[in-house]
Image 1 (cartoon, rainbow, N blue to C red):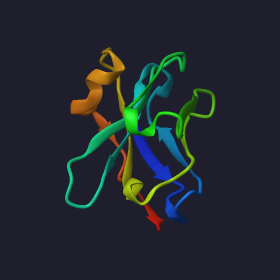
Image 2 (image 1 turned 180 degrees about the horizontal axis):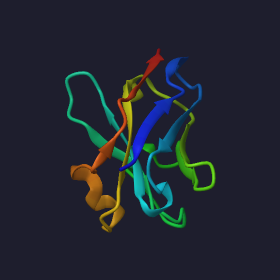
Image 3 (image 1 turned 90 degrees about the vertical axis):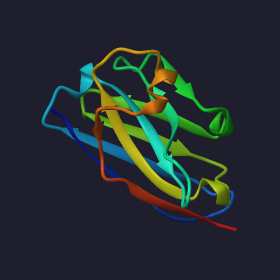
Image 4 (image 1 turned 120 degrees about the horizontal axis):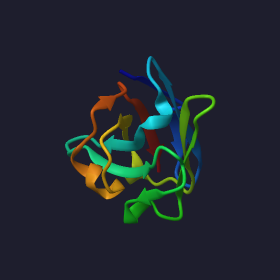
Length: 125
């Protein structure tokens, strides 16, 4: 099974950018659809962006479209999330996740099989 480790979180001012990375090990990452979720204080975890195993197809929740970009490198076994124009409401713990069960990307909103431990992003106003 695959292990996932996120990095790149931190504190940034509103309007700034951050790039999160997810490093996969212990499995064949290239066979997994993968995604970024986030959980803000007092809120449920939510799917924000997903990408197919091939990297050809992506999905974004409406409130990050045009600001966030998901990408992956199956040679390096990594997945990134480029976040631009950050807002205070983007403050959350961001989780990398992966799943080998094929679904439409939006259907992963209920969760995936494998998870990282998360990285905290704080956007100050």
